[in-house]
Image (tube, rainbow, N blue to C red; front, side):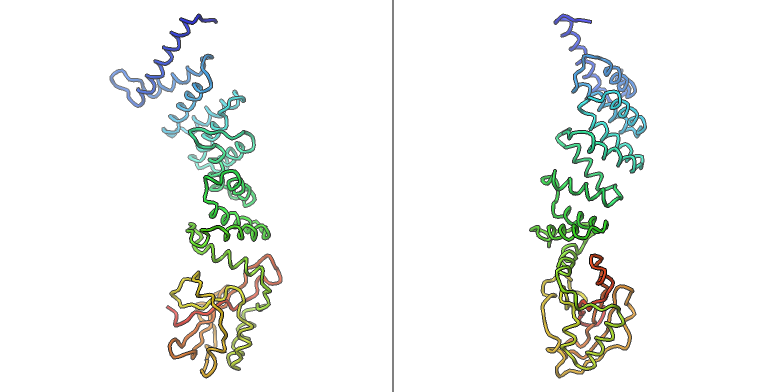
Length: 352
């Protein structure tokens, strides 16, 4: 059907009036105002009009879907959006409709289905900015939260870092990416990414939820990888026996040999492990000479399958008691070293 200019102008005015009624009549049912059901019907009927351009269709579908979501009618929203995408494959806003679909599934606690749609958008549709936010960015944000597979999360973290560096905290994401490489046993990539993490200006001060000692742990892993690792013992018992023998013989040289050469610490029980002063070098001879050093016949009761404490005393007149701290090596990158034991530090003073 053809319209002359005057008729077409009148039609547009009527259409604009209908939209103004919709926008001002939401959620009111008295005094002649439209009900939500009537509003939804007007939007749906408007979609059948072939004269609507893409932005007007977008407004209609968005309003219908948002009303469904606001009223927790998630299945209705999903049906509307997925049918529209299927019937209108060339709609430039299809990525956004599927984004809303994925969020509806999240609201239904159907995370695997939501993950499917978030990932489908990334794989199938070009990026789209709606309300000044990238659809792909929103998908990646959700995927790193809900994905359970390290391989998938590695891809999503890399995409975020490479595509949206201006939108993210790069330092935190390097750390989380390194952890996923580690979870996926990709140790070479994990070490490379940990190196990128500690090179960031704020790496030593950043507070990362769930990772309170991120910088220290990353630095320890990197330094340990670069070291000779020749101070470790195959078992806790062999390490304990060697240390006790060296103390009994006042063999400071042997104790210096047994001590870990990377990240060895001396600290009180109250000190922060990341304190730089805790890593200072010293020789056991400075403390053994002229003193009567003793040790407990057994390891402390707080010892576990991964950590152990040996109480010693007689080191000086100020703080006599030192606890030697032994730790199982966690380094799967080198199977010959992984699971060995190291003397990793000294806690000064009695246990708190």
